[in-house]
Image: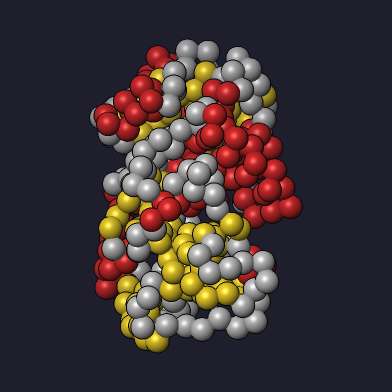
Length: 346
C-alpha cells in the first residue's frame, strides 16, 4: 500500500472542449474509513461523457463540481480497510469514488463484483452504469419489437454497443453509426450488427440510412445528437420511438446550436421522443445486473474496454472521449489486480 494518495481535482472550468490545465493532481495522506465505510484501492476508474456537464457552473441532473473539488465517478477496486460488517479486506467492489489511488466508499452503496463472470473493467461498462443505461433505455423507453429496425448513434461506445446487441437478442435489425472503419468492422463482424455507417467518411447520412435501413427507422437510440440525429429523424416510421440518452456532439458547445427543426418531423410518423436517466431505475438495478451478467456469461453479450494506463493519464482518457479514441468502454487502470486478469476484449 502507498502511504500517500494521489487525487485529481477540477482546477478550472473549461470553455468549449476541456484542456489539460482544467485538471490538477494533488498528493496527500491516504484516507481513513469511518464506521460503515471502506477504504478501497482503486484498480480501474471510469471516465464518461456526462462528466463534462459537471464541469459547468449550471444546474443539471448531475451536481456540478466546484473548482477545487475532487473528480469522481465509477470505480472498481479492492477493499484494503473495512469498517463495514458486510465486507472484508480483499473483497472486490464497485461504487462511486474519486479519481485517486485510494477512495473511501460507503459500504451500503457498493456492490461486490465477481471476476469469474467478467474482468474488473467490465463492471464499469457492460456490467455497470453504461450497461444498465442500455438495458433500461432500450427495453423500458424504446420498447423494440421483433422485426423492427433499431438505429444507434455512438454505437461503438459502451452504451451503444450494448444497446445494439440487446436489440439483436430481441430479433431486430440493427444499424449503428461509428467514426472509424475499425469500429464499423467491430460492430458488424464481432457484435452482429446488420449494418454500420462510418459517419466520418459518409457525406450523405440520409442516403446511407436508405441503404442500411431500407424499411425506415422504428427505434432510434440517440447517444450523439447533431447531424446524425437530424438525418435519422427524417427516416422515422409510424409509431417510432426515440430514446435520448446523450448528446456528446453538443457537450462542449458554449452556445445552444441551431439546426433543422425536428418537431414537424414527428407529426406524420406519430413518433415518441423520451429522454432517460438511468438513476430513475435504481430500484430495478439488481434485476438488470442479473440479466446482463447472464448474457455475458453465456456469450450472448460481448464487450470491449479501452484501457488507458496510469492514474496520471486520467485527464487524457477523459478528453479522448470527445475525439472518439475509445472502442467500447474507456477506463483508466490505476493499480493492477491479480484477480482481474488481462483480457479486456470479450
